[in-house]
Length: 274
Length: 153
Image (tube, rainbow over all chains, first blue to last red; front, side):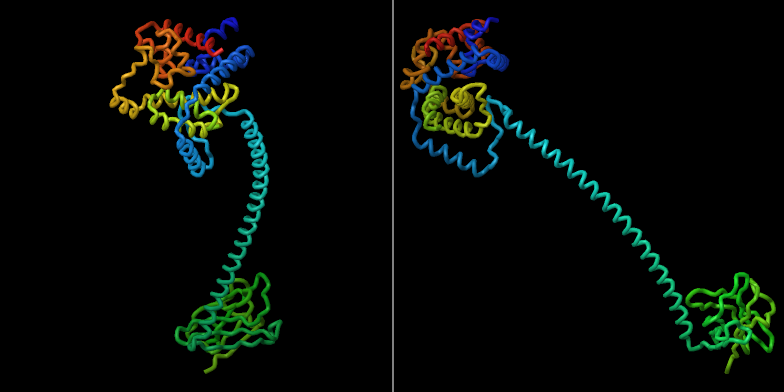
């Protein structure tokens, strides 16, 4: 279509007056953008229309102005962001300048967010490492605690047995056969139940294929009272029940014990008194 | 802005809703709407006055179609038939600006402009109301608009 024909087709007037259909309006806006003549014709008609209507002014009632302004003032107070969903024809047109700022701002935000993510990721890795260290330490502490409480339990058990007033205490000092003359062991013998407990005060550590064995001397004859291993710390072990004994002695025997004691390897001995 | 434009917008509102009381309410809504929506005004699409004029026209026509308005008009027994005689609108505003122009139009064109511009009917609706072909409606409105253009020049 010829541009001049288009201009005089009435579209300019119907667009400006709001009589054009949405399709016609969209086409007219395209034509305005593409052809300066169309834009100029629209502008000329708008100016004429405005001038004509401005001539027919009718003063609205005076109090209307203050009503309008007080309403606007109220809305301003009530809603700081004054963009409201509006009714009617004019549609929200995103403004390009504003969109640019939004785009620039979102790029900045994105960059900031990426940097923050990296920072947080490295912090996160650090905390995981720290956390693992803490877990390891905590495990160590817990197992040390376990060891201590086991030890404490052993000591408490030993202590409660030693405290028992029924216990007969037989000290066995070192004999000349012992490599260490200061060797000593003590038998705690329950005079009621006849249970025998042995406390190692000081004995040389046996070589690997040897084991200490306790003997009860009954009517001059040695009776096996059990073998035992040396332990670190408190060596307090329950051995066999011995109904009757005159003395107790410890010999170093082959591993597993012997049926008769090696008299040459008798390290300590103590007599039962009373 | 209010001082500069309220008079002309008021005259347009009054031409559409007829009653001054209703026009007051509508004009108040119009200015609040203008204030709320000024961010949506796009200078590429036209002059500020054109934008405000269209908001005013739309608001007035919305009022015209609302229940409240129709009830109030029923009680008033409208005597001025805008189409029948030469009297286009109520006394007092018929000899100025656009209304003056309408008075100069041939009756068959004036009726259509009244329906289209001041009542907001679509071309299809006008064709039904006036019982004339859609093509004729379009041609007549186009002729009326071109006459308006000449008149304003």
